[in-house]
Length: 240
Length: 294
Image (cartoon, rainbow over all chains, first blue to last red; front, side, top):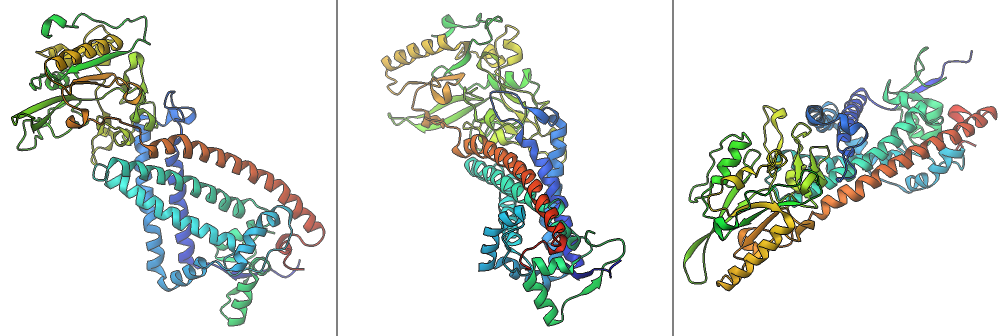
């Protein structure tokens, strides 16, 4: 058997905690929010699962939706409280979209289907991560503004404003759901990238994988001496 | 026209649920006595709510989840310089194209028999989308933070339980001037048009019949003495563009896009797996897959 694989730390514990608190709340919100999708035609009855989600069941789901919404809104504050400096540096990294990121986004659909053409070298976050970041941030703002308006300011704001908020909430739902599906697919199912998931569990990811996918970041980490490298534990870590 | 024109004996045809019924309020005969409000509360077992705004004879500031009909008082100075009241018995208009039914995510609000918009509170989840979609402010959901399960929509049902049993709606039955009439919609429109002509001949030049064409036709008709806006009624009510966009564009397109997306991911998985296994066979599998490493 060959020597154990080398791993490099990508995410800190608070960041991982934040990610999973946010992700859990997000999934609960998506599932409870689907209550509103089962009556496509007002001239007919609710279809499919809609028949089961009415009355007190739907009322409980709405309550759960609100509890999860509070958790989702509090999650970023939790991370900010735990490691404020790192939050800022990570945000800076995620916010800025460079030429490489655009190139990445153009090439990625082909690369992740056929294995070629090659991807341009990427930093800690590639163009896809940054796209995900922006969709998450913008839908977060859309969800929070429209959600709080509907929750607390029904009857205070004009009815037309409420109707617009309802529309915004729904647009954010579809944008977020699409991005979320892709995000989950790439880290859980896609043959090329699924080993990245370990970074969001143990914090470490396979060094060879990281070098291939995030060469700029790995080089910079090794050069500056900031890299936290370890041998993969016997029964965990990346795939293989 | 008074008692002579009573519609008291009229019943909808139980064999023809497609027949459209309506209520017509002849506001020229309304005396603002609020007996209809009391009868409505009593028949529908709705609690009394004392929340009158000071400085008015109007019983409640607006309809609410347990107040389903309300005489709105418009106090104004008329052309002769006299102070006068206009009364409008306000409640659900039972629209043919209803904002509330369009927005309802459950089976609670439906287009029922006889053109009535029915509300089944057992199915209601209290989301209040109906309240905010209604162009007439005629359906409401109480805020009930300490008992969320009591948070249900409430509105006039046109006494669906009574009319399907051959009775008149409670408010119609009790009205002392017979200004509220219940009957076949077409016949009431005919009656209302004649009444408007009569009123115009008597000098009420602004008299008009409201509800014939609005939102595909309302099942609550009004003989008004002044233009609808004077009573706070929208001359041309509409279901909001935002509501329609949400229901008829964003929701179906979103479902379609998610379906197409799932299909695309499945296809991608099959193709990517082949590329991955080939790369592995050629010694470029797993972590070496990224062809950036040549």
